[in-house]
Length: 306
Image (cartoon, rainbow, N blue to C red):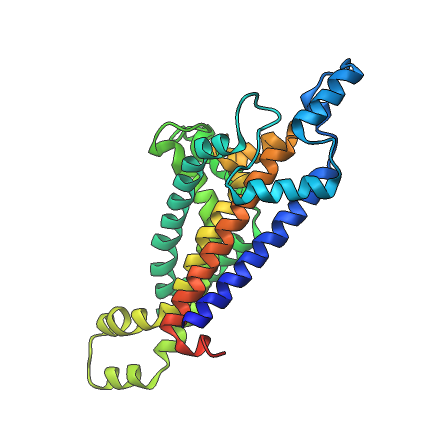
């Protein structure tokens, strides 16, 4: 088990290193940061001094080495478009909002997907099963921004139940959480359904029915628990997907999180902030991935030796 964990950690560190390198390269070819730092009428002297101040006078490979050195120390750099503010400060300010929204979407995913997945598995080949499949297909095919706009139009504009945008309380979180979690509800529901169908077809379930065990007890006490291994593994990955996939939804609902921050940074051509947020997203995704893999390996020892 220890060797498996060390191997996954090494793979994770390598993945983060590759992502940081690609992010650094893409940020440098996206435009000249001097256009953000200086006005168009800046003199040659101002340009030269600004280059020295920001380390832009050094060769690209030296800039990369300095970038890695600061990254190891936890220094993500100074924001270009937000004067006297570091990228770390901006992330610390916005991160709680993104985590809050992602946690709400994760809760929505679990509360809907697990019971509905079990229900459509029990009612296989019925109208309920057909409805569940249609719900899942729509969820996995509809773009999240379209779901968000539809929810906003119905529940905020037409019915005036929830606010259209902003961040002030639970009511502001309901629509973006549903819009963000809908795709994962559909995927998790289908996974729960398929896992339940496999367990329902096992010999010990058939034996329990022959012995006269109540159906609800078979489903929830025996089948559901055994069918949860694969869905729970995916459920853990959803957390990372929701954090990294919040960019569009936060923009649609003007939710002040990291997604909205990275969009603003792109518009302002602030490569430092874009770089920092992308690295944070990548690190979160890799770390959650590793934790889920280790949990799955603990549950199923065959994974460790595969």
